[in-house]
Image 1: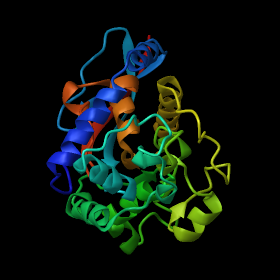
Image 2: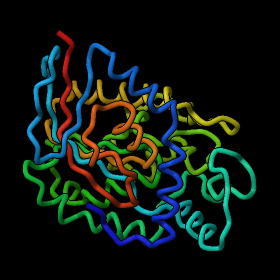
Image 3: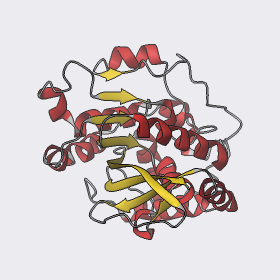
Length: 281
């Protein structure tokens, strides 16, 4: 589900960016992940997992995956596009809206906050209820998770532990785009004290490079490591607030996924899945 309607400009830009991510490197990543001793399969939440010859199911979780609401970088890109401007999104030059210094670790726009708020009824009514909300440490995703699952803060649940947990490996494909460069964790902790930041080791951003984008293999490895971490968590129902490129790589490069899960996420969109970890016999 999506928290808001999207303009024709936004839809056109989404199609362009999805195509730019559909590369041979994504296919190579999927082949690598498919040959690992533990694979992860993704099913729409209403479907029952099927048997996979040669593999034994070891873990299943219900996971609600969310792309953050509209950030200021998204708004700027839509504006550029509506003016007829074009750019190579992986190149750092003045035509690229994602490298403008003012969108560094871009927060949500008012529209983005409304998109996150629109998810609240679904988030509140989930059954079984969400026990853990994992957020990207980038501002817009953290804000989205906190707004969408605000009832978890109001209810004081978690038995004294924080329900919201930041994880470095849930952040967007990094490099070149300053919108994907995160702020320091000390600043994030001050701004979002509701979130558990203890699992992130480096105060400064250890991933971002101004002149080089992460490869699909690097992003895929981060996602796989996150999924191995998630497998060991006790919670059976989890929400994850992340980003479009990360989510596309999850479904197209890392997981064995149903086709309906692979399209580009719009801002403020949530898809609910069953993730199944299977070990090779």
